[in-house]
Amino acid sequence: MEAPYDLWYWPSIQGRGEFVRLFLAAADIGWRDRAREGDAQALVEDMEHRAKNGFAPYAPPYLVERETGFAIAQVAHIVTWLAEKHGRTTGDTATDLHLIQLQLTITDIVAEVHAVHHPIASSLYYDDQKDAAKTAAEKFRSERIPKYFDHYERALGVKDGPFMAGESWSHVDTSLFQLVEGLRYAFPQRMAAIEPGYPRLVACRDAVAGIEGIARYLDSERRIAFNEDGIFRHYPELDAA
Amino acid sequence: MEAPYDLWYWPSIQGRGEFVRLFLAAADIGWRDRAREGDAQALVEDMEHRAKNGFAPYAPPYLVERETGFAIAQVAHIVTWLAEKHGRTTGDTATDLHLIQLQLTITDIVAEVHAVHHPIASSLYYDDQKDAAKTAAEKFRSERIPKYFDHYERALGVKDGPFMAGESWSHVDTSLFQLVEGLRYAFPQRMAAIEPGYPRLVACRDAVAGIEGIARYLDSERRIAFNEDGIFRHYPELDAA
Image (cartoon, rainbow over all chains, first blue to last red):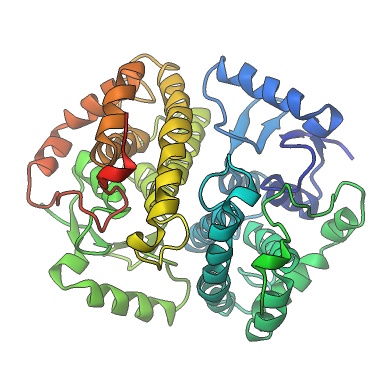
């Protein structure tokens, strides 16, 4: 497949980069995972080089349009930019703006997911903040997951069809897929207990899994496994029904 | 002044709503602070009503265009939408996209600022997570503020002029103003120590303060004071040079 984009992200985790990959996969757009061709150091050097030459990403992931060299960062920004560029908007301005809003709220929950296992500082080891993480996880499971899921379940009821905007998938759906997958990995007991209350969200996740480009991607070696260096981490002591 | 917009936000704090207010003030666009005309309960009821009737905000602030009833949430989304609508973009697509990216990174740091005093859960009292907050604050002061400030200081050096895009202010500048003001309130010792290293950021803050609409707003009763219910809170035990 032709690869008009370079994706730069930490090579050994799905992390935030995965939300970009899933959009590209669903839309059948090719990309190179640049830091996986080299290593994390290549990414650090690329970022330093960009920082010396004008507006630069604050952090990975960022996507580079190879033809122009234009670089764009921030997951919600990247996928909404791609959606506009590759005809994956609905054409209805109010709906498209709502989709961006829903995507930005996924950004919020993803930051909270990371903060569950690193509540005090991302630069400290998990083991050094495990007690705080246990309380954070309890609150996240009991208060935050239902609050966010209620929001998305209701939003999925606005239009007919498995996806947020109806019959056609959008960047929100591919991100919701990853959110559900990640939470299933991190909190399997909690998700098993709560999922029956969110049939639309589960149906949306299933419909995304059925998109041809997504199915092909998930089945490929490019989809690396969740692991305990990423955002969604499975620490059994942080999970409960 | 004519008020084409209703802003809905918690009535007793600046909070995230303030980033929207500052943009509106700088652009001389009128708005009503709806929850301040009533109370927090009016806001809760308005949100519940919206949630029953289609796509709705996940959380305040949200802005309602009075003529159409269209509601938009998420600070970065609101201010970039306003910028486009009211001619406050640069007209250069790459620059405008970079401005959105820079605004989204302000969203990230604002979430981190709140997490400093509520590291374990936003639903727990500060006093019940004070020890964790002390460690979180130490890391935030020593690692996170410089990392974010380095990023913005460098970005401010790309174009000539006090503002991010050069001579004309953008939504990024009004938000950076609030970020600096908030951090000065929350961490006065740390900011006094670190600010000399960030002359462009301070110059940008000063230039925003000099925008006529901003000066008028800051001088008005609509600018309520920072307080310990908001995002930027001054707890002396969390500050140090």
